[in-house]
Image 1 (spheres, one colour):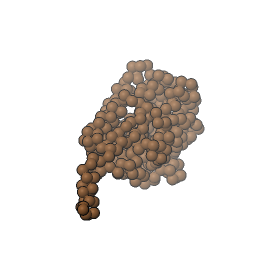
Image 2 (cartoon, helix red, strand yellow):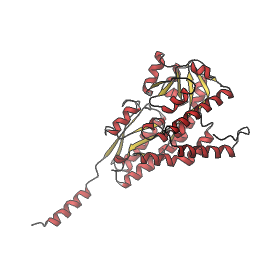
Image 3 (cartoon, helix red, strand yellow):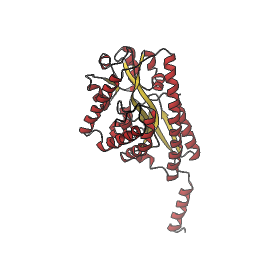
Image 4 (cartoon, helix red, strand yellow):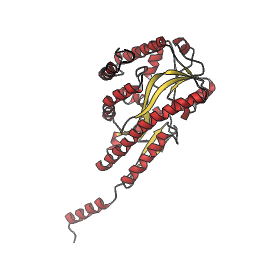
Length: 341
């Protein structure tokens, strides 16, 4: 007769010998399939599958097939999806401070971006974790510019346009309100149709995004000053991710971290090429006056101050951001400008 203790020990050994059950993370994104972004994501997923002996897999749903960002976040909440590739702005309902890099008319060039991000990326990733999501890194989306059917060089021009902003984008809604403009809020997946029907005639996009989403085929002008900085990340529900074995978690962090480092570099290169391609394809570049740019920046700063006062953004994080930006500008004055942000 087999003693119970020996039976339990044998069963335990048998269970330990069995392969761990595979986990497939279902990840949605509005990014079209076939883009550099998706190619890098799929390559990373293939490496993770190989290095974990198939225990960790990713299934992607690109091109907005799972709905707009709000729909995707709801599906994550109820467990239909595990995560998503989103912009910082799209994460506002999860972690409002994730929008810190996308404050309107804040960064002036990529050197400023690189300096501030070197100081703050890790804190944003930790903030997402505190709010229940694991991120493996931040990928540059690039500077977004205004694309329009009629030239926009002044505030008066902008007031004549039907401007799109993403659903739930409270900060840019507040910024446009500073100039008496009521933008049209739509999901990204609805923008092309809205441009075709005339519901909107002005959008903000990175050069790569405008081409990938075919928005550039419905506009004629680009206002050549950065409106805001866009970044993207993959987030996975923390509870789902932490069910993985610690060794498998480490593999995912290592591989996806490397993917985001590559994307950060590649996306900047792709945007430079797309910027040049837009010129070649007949998009006319409009240079706003320094006075107009100064007016827009002031309006953006007022809108951010109101969001802080309303408790929507953290004053401490805004102060940290402004401190790093001021540090960089003080040591790299442009035309003698050492004015703090």
